[in-house]
Length: 506
Image (tube, rainbow, N blue to C red):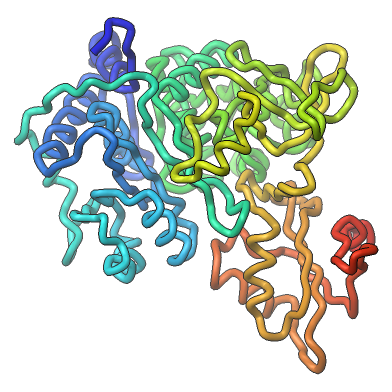
């Protein structure tokens, strides 16, 4: 290992030394607590046992589970081994989960009992997986996590550099299937330092870890706070009443937010009267009304941001009050340019595609060389998002490029083409266009405009249920409208812009 090497495992080693007996983690459900030294010791045990069953550098470790301590420890053990974590969104359908596991080809998979049924049905399709483990009680083909947690096999250090792959997070299905964004140790380390510096996160802070670890924001915020020596309070699944209770009890100071999380917490606080005064720093995406209500209630700061999985969650970050409505300024370790369709830089005030260079940009999409060549053309990461810079260097988000249209209900990424493909599987539907519309709960909702086949009938709820049974439920439309025809362009193709114009506010 080179003297200049540093990996995520180095965080666990460092914190065991400098914060050893301080509490690193509290589980909201079980009230289990663990200090920084114990975290490192347990990681070493898990890493040693994984080595003993054949897990080596570069191997993938699949996880289909809700947040808890063992999940976080597994991230640490993978860092020690140079293995790559493949976290799977447990909200996805069985077919979607199968695709991600087949794409990443993990050697082992870890899960919870609540996912035994779906994973058991997929096991015959997943030939790469040699062992299946449960984070709690085992059953049939799922071995108990204690098999890899016991202090049995000593961990043999592995040469791991910052440039080595660490996690594959699958993004929305831009062309029918999700793409696996491969992020490195260095990507995560630099993102940690950006959050710590710009949000003033240190060991005095308490983080309410309420976003799932399959999501880049959930993983990165938990890791950034751990890196700073702060305390993580873990929620397996978000619940507003419990969140307010935990904020008051543990004096939570830091949190990541996607609508409607923060508004749900504020409503629960109004109902219960519990204090959330300690919540000094919140970042993420939300409406101006919710942000201002939070800041007025707590004197805390909301940090506006723009980012992607591919940019390690963060590209711009600034206090909301500096420029309400803007997405913030580029963080210190990101060079951001806005380019036109010919990849020429546009001046301030003009809209262009957001591109980025820097140590937080992903290594590439897993097994997709053609996509990588397109996304990294001219040595810039092309996000597919549009924005404009004002005269003071603040970025204003301006939506997606037409060929990469994206809907973001509650912080999740949904591509219209994926939803349209499922809708068209319904025998009653002849044509459809799906697009985003304002939504009071999710900030952006999904609307489908459909033309039915002759003599067919279908209700909006029947179509919504049909979609929800085939892909993740957060991808199903909240709004459905039927029409006798859709506008077309001069070539006879559906004119998506006119569809949105005519039906956006219906």
